[in-house]
Length: 300
Length: 271
Image (cartoon, rainbow over all chains, first blue to last red; front, side, top):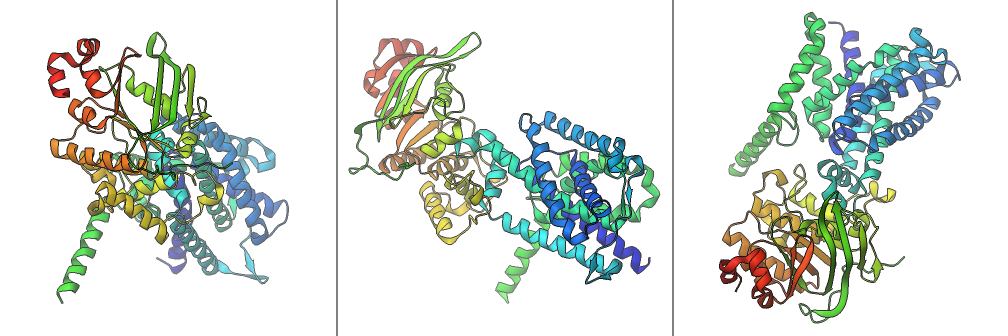
């Protein structure tokens, strides 16, 4: 295993962790299950790609525009989802995924099936930064995202979103306009997912419609559910484990969907809050260890 | 717009003030052919505990839902503190000072008990884009939450996830969460169901404490001793209509009420 290979895995794992943190706000907090998050990922990646290749902007000048646009499109795409819930919401998000894929595939403006190539690596002070530099940029964005999500977890906003997700009637009876909070969740979620799209587009250097297929959406949801819905640690853990593990199990590549599907079913049945989620298997183990350590320290 | 919500505590706490806080006029709610609530008139004074009783399917919960805004009445009007709230959505009514609990407890199970109370405390803030990113774990906010948690007697389990609490504590948590919204009207939908005798007594004490805060209460309950002891006035619903109204004693001796609901045995329990 070369250093470059490890670096590339770490870069992609960090990008997915940012995306899953975004998905966590929508699916973890407001419990709006999205099986179309690859659409939001695509919007970030394609917007950045177009701004770089067609408008001639740089990574840094295009980034804020892309993020803003991701947020706006996220809200617009969230609108039809307000009318539906549960299974119908899942179907709607799947639909959104196929619509976005269809648009990017059939319109020449988006490069069609040939995609958009030539998305250059960002530069700092006119100098190329290389893969190490890009990894550091990605890692910084991941840390920034974790910080924002951590701060957000202490806000009224997160409480209201979780209340909305758990029981809309109860939330309404406590002064929460649940529709508004679902929209907020879509906006925040698509912002982080758009950011992940940007970072992904630059690290690959090109975007194709097939990169943002429904299978990717399934992978994203698996990552979040595996790690733990509604927790930051679970989202990051799920993204890293489910991205890195398949790299070691390349021989089962063809059965990937089977493995993900089976695992998703097992987790939902055995660990509904995820391995590292609230009350999950690892979560309880860690809590027990911390307690034991505190006790032994008290004794000594 | 200035709103006085919940803050005003009656001078001689616990006493009923002859000020109408809630007035229902000819409220109707039909589900296709079923007339769940069929023209109910109801008034509630400030500081009063009104017991709402009746057989299953009498329309008690439906009536409560039309007051809290979960259901919109098909006809009639609902006035709350001189304001017509008939068409207001539930979350706006909550902001005006109507809080409620649910027949089947609806806690936010993945939040801790403390966080459940905090959700209620944010009642007036929820929805503002500025409060979306505001810290809710500031010292003074947590202190106030602690007061409510102490009042409902949940200090020992405030950091536990609501999903791990037993039903007795969940009922109290729901009341605490509703109280946290600083309401002036509290709607309790069968708060004593599923509780044992000791838990029921504790709950009765809690309801008394809440009355002393100057909060008016509408109480739906099937446990006769519980509702008869607590209520200042009782309204009996049957098939969507009011069939009797008066003090607990009057209602318990009403022949029609005995026939449709209490039965001869029930009167013994009630008195």
